[in-house]
Image (tube, rainbow, N blue to C red; front, side):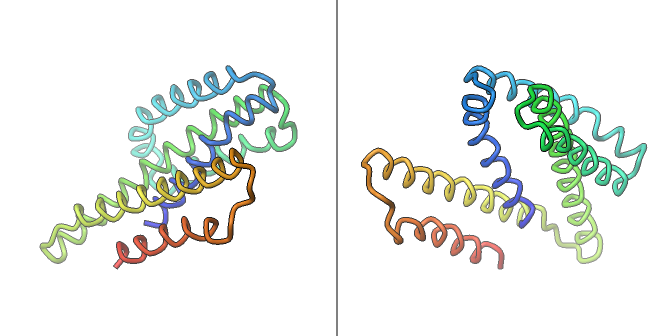
Length: 181
């Protein structure tokens, strides 16, 4: 479940900051569309290639490969954040790494489900899927509520109160705690 929460947070942060980056760093609002199109195309290709590569390299090596790809893609971007080539390389390597990691973690979930069923005769895949789905929805809810509070206070011109800052965190943590038991 922690992986699903981290995955959701990372995706929400990336998707919410890409327009800012394209507009103010790259100087083109249209660049966000191109960046997301590159991400989508690479993610689709990575999805197709992940299973054969997993069989060829093995699960552990495939996870190390995806982490290494993401790290290598960040180096140029960190050194030259204004470079168009750096952002596209970062997009490509991020798409590969995230797609491979997501598929591998879900495959591991399925393997654990099969192992538990084999040992106990009890199938738990629906329970795992339900908890993961809850975690995913809670991440989205937290971000949307938080973004609403930020945009509301900017539009009205008032600083956010301490209550409005804490409310989204509380509304995220309580259902998460209940769902993980």
